[in-house]
Image (cartoon, rainbow, N blue to C red; front, side):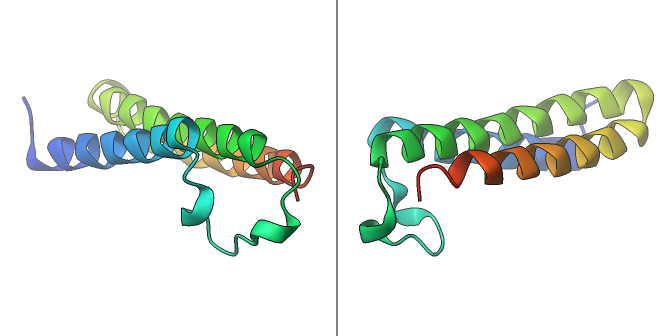
Length: 98
């Protein structure tokens, strides 16, 4: 059974996936908060890293929504943990481009 919440979560995940594709493929890194063009050494690398990260978050939201139908609230707890860990990893990766 498809609920309104499930549709909303799919839309959010899809939007994040498309935003990440925009970062990566279109190199539109001006959307990144606190982006200073003069401090970035590798714009293509930063665009790829940021794009893949945002796309991964979108996919994780899709998977959590699907798993929530099977295992319940535990999928959202797992999603929170995965996003927290991936954020720390992404901060380490992005520091090499700034």
